[in-house]
Length: 498
Ligand SMILES: Cc1cc2nc3c(=O)[nH]c(=O)nc-3n(C[C@H](O)[C@H](O)[C@H](O)COP(=O)(O)OP(=O)(O)OC[C@H]3O[C@@H](n4cnc5c(N)ncnc54)[C@H](O)[C@@H]3O)c2cc1C
Image (cartoon, rainbow, N blue to C red; front, side, top):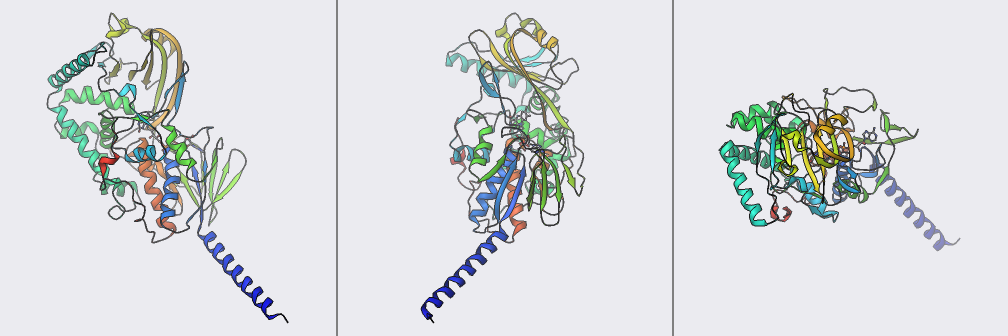
């Protein structure tokens, strides 16, 4: 008998058994995740799941699959190409304090730029369907000193029209933004939220969703003129709706008209693409999920390709309002209508006569509108000035007919029309779908869109969903390891000078 040989065999056997046990153990704890939607919400869930689970040293997250019905990622972050040039077709501007977006841009080595149509020095006109009720001066000069003087004169004019209400509006917005910054706090002070209501209450934002923006602005002392004109122009541009939208969506929309706005050079969609690329994800493009069935321990997802996938966790990262995923068992969520925004891109020249002007250069660079049945569009902005014409973006609630476009434009070389199911139609008081749709592991990122719909709010909701998944898969998870850049830490480093 070869004793030495036998001992070696036994040792190897024990080692293999332990290894198998360890592998089996870790495999049993590595949960498969299916994410429906590759917009900023779905991409952010994948990113934060990987980031937080690797830092927690627990092998909780196994394969992550993202399903996208389109052939490209990004969802409502999309571009349009007109006359060979590319522009944002959907989500275009980011706020300087959108810290997840700031972090993504840095992490993915993307470049930030100032979007042309959000330039503070742009001339503004408020159109009521017949005339400009308010119009700032155009600076057609290229001289910086002249531009500065015109900009100063415009500020004085604006103050003369709207008075101290302007300051009241900006302090209301600042206060709301400061409350929102609590969502970047460290994990020690920031709980994991199981519902949208809880998340909003914790940041002191819930009450804003129980009243309309108009009511809130009256409460903070704004003049009726400012509410009817400037505030209305802004909510119409950003959400295609009046000041009857809920107060939080309204405040977010007002914040999106301030200074320091930015965008990702080459397209905001790159944030979603980069996060997906770096999160070890199996990406299924052109694959629409049709059914999600809970089988007891896993969800079975069936796609339009006739394929079937099993996942222990499923995340819905798209609004459920206009899509037709069948869930088994069924659940009910509050009814929500989406606001459709028609984005029309035109290379050409506006018709000055339509606006009662003599020259194209007299028409303000940004034309906003009041709530009136005589108004045929929501806004017109210049995306780019070319040598002899311009590229414009028109937003409207209804599709722009060619006949109407021919009235508004004297030259129209190319036109592209996009119909977006853009964001929720906001109502106060808002009602929220749950983050956890079925009490098990079916999660819904876009429940948060009733609070406000932006790239950043999707990322904030997605980050919470990632924490929620991890905390529900295994308690306790040590969330304290990965330090997010937070509002408690050095904010100045996160601020981008653009
Ligand atoms: C015209 C417009 C202008 C906007 N302007 C701004 C702005 O300036 N700044 C800002 O911050 N926000 C803006 N927004 C809002 C912003 O775009 C959204 O809030 C944000 O992009 C939502 O991201 P999301 O990932 O939650 O959803 P989405 O981007 O909608 O992603 C959902 C994805 O899911 C996919 N999908 C849906 N159903 C299925 C299925 N069954 N199977 C597989 N895939 C599916 C969709 O194709 C889509 O790609 C704007 C939106 C629009 C439309």
